[in-house]
Amino acid sequence: MKFADILRRLDAYPRTLDDFSVRTVGGAAVTIVSTTIIGFLIFLEFSTYMRPTLNEELFVDTTRGHKLRINLDVTLHNLGCNYISLDAMDSSGDTHLRVDHDIFKHRLDLQGKPLSEMEPIKEIVAVSPANKNSSCGSCYGAEYNATHCCNTCEDVLEAYRLRKWNVQVDKIEQCKGKYQRNDDDAFKEGCRIQGHLEVNRMAGSFHFAPGKSFSIRQFHIHDFQFTNVKLSHTINHLSFGEKIKFAKTHPLDGLRVEVPESKGEMFNYYLKIVPTLYVRESDGAPIYTNQFSVTRYRKDLTDKERGMPGIFFSYELSPLMVKYAEKHITFGHFATNCCSIIGGVFTVAGILAVILNNSWEVIQSKLELGKLS
Image (cartoon, rainbow, N blue to C red):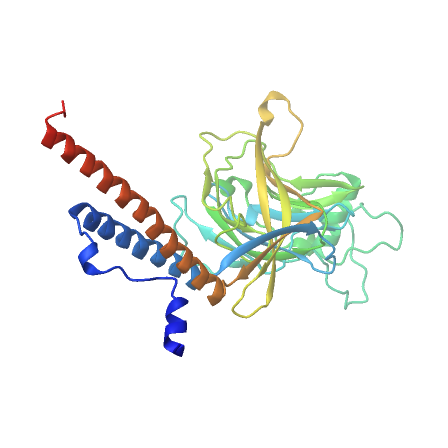
């Protein structure tokens, strides 16, 4: 027996002679439809193969060495930049008054257009410069001992605040040429606050409020003449890290809050932050960022409610971290899926073709016998 005859016996796909095969219109229709379906499914599989998939994993967050970066871009439409203070604090009691971590204020008109002739205002930390003069400045009766000196305007104002006294700035020698402002001008402009700040990685808060901020005996106070302030605002952007399109890293972007009239209101945003790790397949470099959900609350202070007019953001960090990792499908997996598509569709199509052909033959035989009613 020849070797070729032995190989022929192993043929699992014997051909049927053309004389014994019957081609029908129904079979042709099934073939066209099944081929179209196969082509469409293989195209979808190829698209999935070319695009990396995203695997999600949840585990306990053990990264404590990173600072929490707060990116913010907020517009207050009816309050001037010189009358807004941005303050931040965390649960450890670390308070930062008038934060200057790359925060800039842009003056706007009441229509929201920037004042082109004005440069952005950089926030300044409330730290008094070192005294280069040996003379001791007067505190105008607010000194707490005989050696207490007030060599700068800030020293005098702080001494008066500790005494809880009102101060006439125009009568203080150290303040001449400074603080020449009228709170009536506070509502003639708007302000856009942009930038970022880095805080300790723990629960905390930050807020925008009218007036100069200071602390007296662990109380946080803002010095402002008016309690009825129109705090219409737009959150152009707020995130805690890098922005990822598919994740909820910036759910408040574009939120606009309108206040119809000037009255004392307190806007509270309670944020639940979930640390997030994103690993891209292209470079493998991890990106540490944060997602967050938000609950909003609005308090009317005209009904003798306790509080301070302003926009307050309080945040807490979740102990769990979400990891997103890009993963590319292997070519073997792609080839296996393509073979499954071809074999499965052709098998189902063959069954349908047999059913259609048998049904058509039964109908034809009954038509010939005249038994089809």
